[in-house]
Image (cartoon, rainbow, N blue to C red; front, side, top):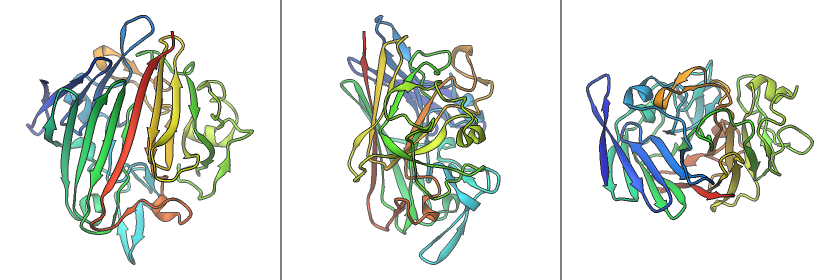
Length: 343
């Protein structure tokens, strides 16, 4: 077990960086936001590549507005009009994205100090107490996030039991680049989805489902991320690229394959599995001149995010799978990143 100083926050809290390592992978996470800072995987040449974007110390994450590596909650993605009704009561949230709520508003989980409950060479569990009406959501809960290395996989688990009916939709917002630098337009991606949920100009889903067939949104077979990203297609134009929720095929609440990502340059393959019904594909469209690790400067298209989730604005869309977690019911969701090498 290895713990490093990760810097002091603006309000004087000491933060730490924790290392997990097995024979294949190594990752580093911080108690500031329970954020994934580094994820090291071997490439086809035997070199070790950090496949996620991030910062060298806590100050970078304090100032970050793009959620690099963050575990986002209580409700990830957008809620239209920054409001919803649950059990006859209307709740109003922060309007931090125009008239909408994005990633739960201004007081995000990813900007708080989490408590380390367990730590071994290959696993760590963080917890965060979230009181009733925290961020505007009803119900108190203790959110638990566990990172675990198993063989060639990094597994993330989210767990909580609210004391009132509430919304829970936790995700990890890591920015992946399987080469460790440059853009990802040559990365080959496949998404296990025949449909997506188109959005309006404010990135709020319209509530309908659209087939990807015959559109630039089609990733049912592997293709380069950059192949169609510049097409004159309304969904791509208004979002400046991919920033859309895909409907995972044959969702039944169990863990299933969702995404395949591959870089020919490094030979690294990443497969993502999850028990969420949707996944947001985001091509870092608004990543403007972020100063990251080792002096790197990040730009749009320098990474791709795949965020497992309940669909955006699901609480206001009756045809979408519901993000409501009932009082006393255990919320538990998983995200699994599995790595291999194509030589």
